Every structure is written in C-alpha cells, then in structure tokens.
Length: 175
Length: 300
Ligand code: SF4
Ligand code: SF4
Image (cartoon, rainbow over all chains, first blue to last red; front, side, top):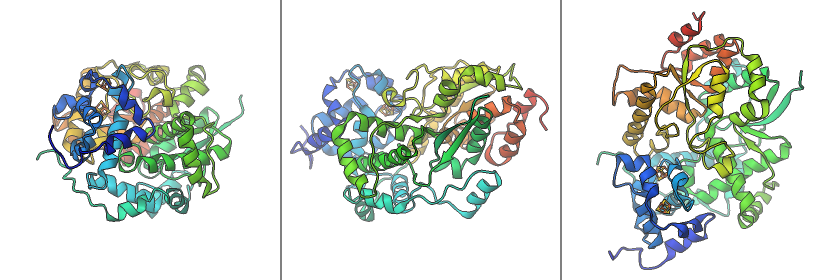
C-alpha cells in the first residue's frame, strides 16, 4: 500500500462512520453501479465514486485532498441505482468537509459560507433589489437574524475556521 | 368558493433578490387558486445544499434545523419555491425525524436562541402544493388560454426530487407531477433522453468547464425532442439553462437557443396573465420569449 501522511490510522474512516448517515458506507460492496450511473464519471474517467468509497473504507485520507471530490454534483443519480442505498454523495460531502482544514475547498464555496455567516444570505442584498421587489408588489422580507446564526454555530466554531482557511483550489478544469 | 389557504413561504436568497419574477408569477398563480404565501422574518439562507454542505455539514444541518424550527412556530405548512431551499429543509427535517441523537444535539444549540425543532413540520415544494393540495381539476378550471399545439420539456432537476425518503415526491427517475401540470395547460409534454439529468450548475464553483459540458448535453437532448421551451422549477437550474445558456450552446451550436420558462410563468400564461410574463421577460430572460408567446396568440 502506498504510504501517505494520513493513512497510518483509522481516524478518517472512524470519523465518517460517526457522522449521521456515515455508517451507510459499510453497506458498500464495491459493485460499481454508482460509477456507471454517474454523469460526471461519464465525461471524466478519473472521477469514480466506487473508488472514492473504497478509499474511505481503507481509511485513506488522501481522498480529502483530491479536488475531484468537489466535482460531485450531489445529483444522487448514483444513490438511486445503488442496490444497498449507500448515501454516496453524502459520503463525498464528508470527504469535502475533512478537506477544509487543508484548504481543499473552492474559493466560491468559502465565499458563500462567509456571506451566510456574515449576512444570513448567500448574496449581498442592495437597494436596487429592494426597490425592484417593491415595484413588483412583493413584500419586504426584513433582515435575517444574523445573531441567531452566530449563536447556534458557536459550539461548532465554523466562523473561527473560516477566518484562517485559504483555498488551495485551482478551480479550473484544464490543468 | 373555498376560503384562502395560507402557507409559510420560505424565500431563500436566489428567488426574492435575483429572480423575483419567479415569486411574482408564483404568487399570482397561487392567488387564483386561493392560496397566500406568508414570509417569516426569522428565516435566513437555507443554507444552500451544493457547497455549504461540503464546508461544514454539521453547521449546514444546524442552520437548516433553525429554519425548520422557525417554520414550526408558524403552525402552518411551509412551502419553498426554490428547489435548493426545499431540499435543504426537507433533508434536515428528515434527518431530525430519523436520528434522535442528532435532534438532541441540534436542540441544545437551538436552545441558545429560544427555539426547538420537533420534526413535525410538513415541508413542501410547488409541485406538492399544485399537484397534491390544489389538484389538477381545480387548476384546469383556471386555464383560460390553453397552450394547445405547443410542446414543453419538463426539467425537474435533482434537488427537487431526490432523495425520495425526504422529498416525498412521486418517483426518483420518472416523476410525473410537472408533466401533468404541463398537460393541464393544454400543451404536449416533450419526450427526451435522460429526463432526470442534472443541469450542471452545482459544480460551477469547482469546474466550470465540466459543468457546461453537462449543460450542453442536457440542452442537446432536449433539442432533439422538438420542444418549444424548457420548463423549470429551480432558480439555479434556471440560471444555468437560461441566463448562462450561451456558454452551453457554444459547445455544440452557437446559433441554437431555446426559451426557458419557470413553471409559474407557464401557468400564469395559461391563466391569461401573459402581460406580466412579457413585462418581466425584458429583465429576467436572456433568450427571447416573444416568438414563443406569439404562437400562443396576441403577443406584442
Ligand atoms: S453502487 Fe452502492 S454498493 Fe455498489 S459500489 Fe456504488 S456505493 Fe458501493
Ligand atoms: S451524486 Fe456525485 S457521484 Fe453520484 S451520480 Fe451525481 S455526480 Fe456522480
């Protein structure tokens, strides 16, 4: 087996199994139907959900450093076809989450997360948007309760993590 | 005539501020059907399910649960017009129902803001409301301008439909509710390959080229069906298939274009509210809808 920095213990695999719906991983028997059903695999044969799950099963944390996991659409076409109803895109989401500390997160994803924490929305709402709503006869929606967001997330400490993390993500496809 | 029914309206970010013509059309159509939408100032971003999940899933499900808890306080059913919002609220609600430990952990966090989530909320999308609650018969009565002779391709998108155990939709691979709503307008439903494929949008932040390769494939298959327009529910699908359509068609035929209508716009047209759709089209549609509306008759 290839020796990688983080393959020496089962930490990654155990963490995945502890997460809600993470234990569905253990039902995977590597049949490959997910990969056959996957539209991303169809245009890029280095994207292979079956092999991604194999990595998690083998506690190979290098998966969390792979930019490819972020090209999962979360479309769930794989999950519909999986005979064991493994929560495949969810397991890939968990690999993405583990990759945050190393910066394996697209810049756009970090920007959105920071916007949500700071303003309660993915986008900056400006005067002209509010005017347009008014002109269209649509009601005022008020301001999202940002203080509540901060309060319920306090224990998780996401705001702190986002302060320091930097995306090492190229983002482009044509390397 | 039945009394008006009110739903709690979960607005999210995209529809109210980037694509308000969705909300305008939906409200107008629902009003005809004696339905009111009532927003609640306690709601915030759902949060969106395609990237925030991968930043911090625990934070995602916690913020989603806070929105669900706010909805629970209204005592009404909640409808989210956006498929992303709907998916987030439905999935979080389902996880809370299934996982007592998760529910307990989240309620500890919600306690700090005086909220509590039980999992008893009913989260709906526009198809649940139109097809399920109102019913085709009632909608048919409001169709004053039948769209006979036109053919539409229903693009359901992924997050509206999957996973079935949380979305409570009719089928994960062959859903029919939007098909039925198209037929109720008098139009024909286009048959095309890969009905339940993704629009490609979720991976634009990580790999835009791959995203538009998928979008191009999607549009090419719909083109082969001879559809007059694509009908969508989701604002993200709309952005990808309509606002950004040129980036996709550039990959196979830069001359080609196809109008995209929000389902609410389609129903509004068939209910005689074409003028509203036309006046919003100037600002919110990049592909001209004029020629399509002329086919329906009487367009400027
Ligand atoms: S289809 Fe399911 S069981 Fe088969 S390899 Fe994929 S995840 Fe594993
Ligand atoms: S959810 Fe991800 S892995 Fe599954 S089919 Fe869609 S793109 Fe492929």
